[in-house]
Image (tube, rainbow, N blue to C red; front, side, top):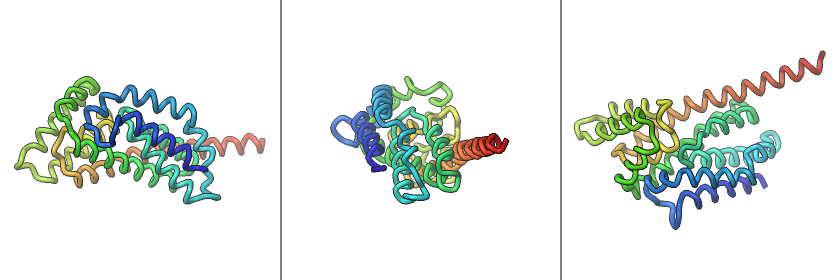
Length: 230
């Protein structure tokens, strides 16, 4: 069944990043990032992405393929400091741009909303700030602090906060997946602004990643056909 290996990864990710419930603080989730990454690697060794991707046949099972890919992207991007770009590239190569792009963008956005909401509901700012100081680069930490100051100022309007958040979401030095937890647990940014900025960031990053994958697959197939002709 296509969804079974994806569910195994989701369960492994959830169990490794939470102890007894889903609503841990952002600091607790991030402080366990190394252990979580190691356990996710173990899970994907048993059920690697390549094996899951090999089972995807959009022409024969379009709904199952979309749901499997969406769950896979969402689960992968719930893990702090684990990049989702390789998976987006792989899906672009497997499914093509038209199918893979909306799946990756929506899956990554969903992961962001879930992480942000969990951190917001059970935030421990002291732990989160300590973990951020240890995990983030000085430049990323400085930008996060500037954004925290911006959202804490009552006179700042939504437009200014949104523009600053979009810039932070697109910044290459600020980790996207871990940023979901940090923004939810250490800032006062409204969820609606987070969703808008995250969606825009996901659209741009996944546009590039999926284009690379789809374009690479087209070049490979073209070269293979030329070699068969000659």
